[in-house]
Image (cartoon, rainbow, N blue to C red; front, side, top):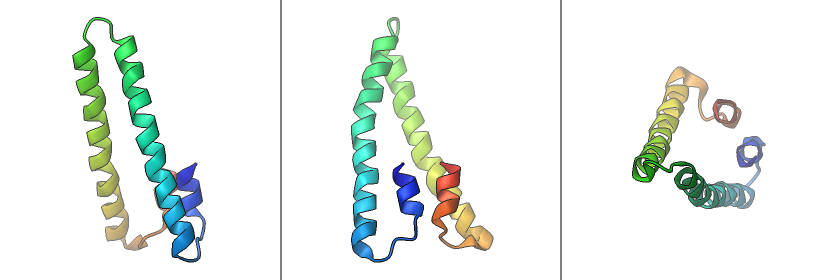
Length: 87
């Protein structure tokens, strides 16, 4: 939802700052809940499940900027709708 807000043509720094803050807050709130759910479901190997969960987050942190770089390198500039569509 926050990416959809960031895709809107925001005029000015204040609305953009609010959107970026909401994006960060959403990630900060969701991560512990996902980790707790993974640990609750992994009866036999909770540490393996936790490591896999963190690895998936790190993979997402790597792929996101890479796709953004491909978008910029393709000459599309910085279009927010392209990022929202990929998410």
